[in-house]
Amino acid sequence: MCRVCRGDDGHLYYPCLCTGSIKYVHQECLTEWLKYSKKEVCELCNYKYSFQPIYRQDMPKALPLAEILKGNVVADCYNISNVNYANR
Image (tube, rainbow, N blue to C red; front, side, top):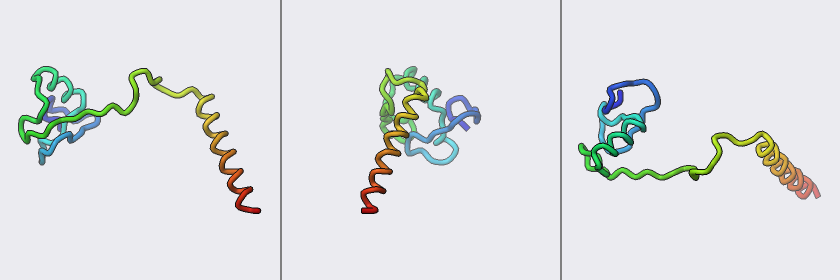
């Protein structure tokens, strides 16, 4: 159960060192709470939150099929060349 909204639907995270039922929170709830409270640490355990972006802001939501297939072809060519070289 999320310690901010008290809901249990969606993905729950444990972004700090709190334990027990208070350690879980929705990412959206935590983000909103931090904006509202202007805090950078957990008010309960004093753990400093750190957010690291995984993707750049301009990344597409999904890769085009052509890009996926191109990556597979390149990987297959690499694997075939390694097999041919190993069989010499």
